[in-house]
Length: 128
Image (cartoon, rainbow, N blue to C red; front, side):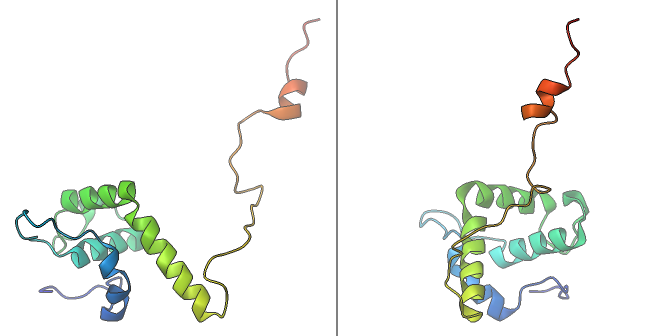
């Protein structure tokens, strides 16, 4: 890395946890010019700071490149796989089973239709 690190950058230890989950280059492709670690660091910076894609600092890879990889990895399940591995590691460190056995849904968190169920039936104007 030739730039000064950001607080959101992965440590070497953190990188080792996820490095093998990122896609490997195909044998016949040209060598990768942009390290995947820099793509991940740029995404972490974006998520932590809340900046827009086009406002990523210039010492990261081009924002269009970062956004492209983000979308590819989202669609192919890479981010979900990373999330699952880190969740399992965290749970094991806490002495728990690697995968949760239950979930809690809060009615405030579950999006519903604007009007539905009994309320929809009682808020219609009467035909009389």
